[in-house]
Length: 494
Image (cartoon, rainbow, N blue to C red; front, side, top):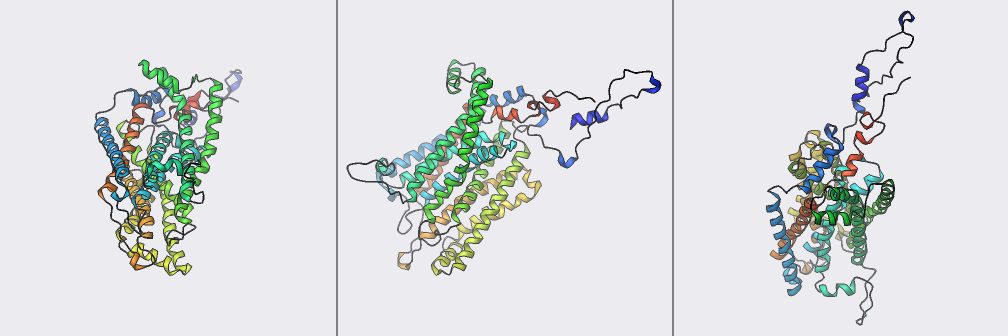
């Protein structure tokens, strides 16, 4: 646009008056500037050159960490060790240290599992689905979102294993391995489906994340001044030279992995929803759960991406790369998926009334007006009301308000999983079987410690690896476009 404006503002070509100048230069093509509504918002502000992008992103992990990093790491590491200590205490003592009872045999353990699996969905969506849809704005946030996926899956994998009690038996009941006690996996159980779905999801996400890292690891290898770093970055960059053959194979592999990852966005949380939907428990036995869980997972995942990326862009001065436009687009995704989740909440109540089952109808009345009413209305406030603030562009472009609302989304999605699990089973068919779940201090601090594990891994990630894809950000700048004046395009003449 700037080039076109410059051409249009230039002097008009001189005419051949009286035939005096028969060899005048041919007139230039004057292109009109595009209308304002068709202007594209730049994905990297201020026309930053390639060298600036490399220095700014690579400098985050090459320079010493800011002073805040060490206190944050120590607190996170302490929380992680606390969680591992409580898991050891649980294994040594038994699941009675949790607040589980009859009939509430599932509570915070499965709530935390579903919560963390949902957090990881935004990474795969941003990386794979938006890659296939050619959405270039993903390039500034996909690396951190992919890493967040892996760390969330690591947190999620702890809870379904330890909630079984006898963890040392997991080797025998998870894989289909025959043994002398003739214990075989129950393939009709959705808990076993989770094993295959989550392990596949984690493996493909790891490969996708690592494949995208290879060119940037080679950049860090070439810039490294420490022999150990040069050796490690060189080993993991797989001998990358930046040749045409390297890039051709890289792009093929990346596209194949994006194609493999895309169905996982839909399948993984659908299978997690089968933990509930294939049962006969009122409040769980509903066909809306798979799409409802997938929309909720993307909703909570984008909330966590914003929770992490907004402080990171400020603390490391990455405002020219992670722009307000990136944040605004993520807010729109949260608004869309939050509307889907709100629709699902309403549809659940409609089907409970329309289906005519008194048990189903009571289960949903009990959610809203029973002993756990506070959890239900916290969920509604955070997941249905707060995202609609993003209809306002003023709020979408205010980083502080966006960060606060994203925090509400994360809180609300945890309450959603708690409401679905606990309120559906704490009152059985007979009043004599009714109970009330109250978490113990082990429940609470195990969950808090899982955030310590998540943040420890994330802080180590931004310390030693580029949190933004250097090569992909460069590829969406005007300098990388050979048809753009900044990319070397020449003026054309008649």
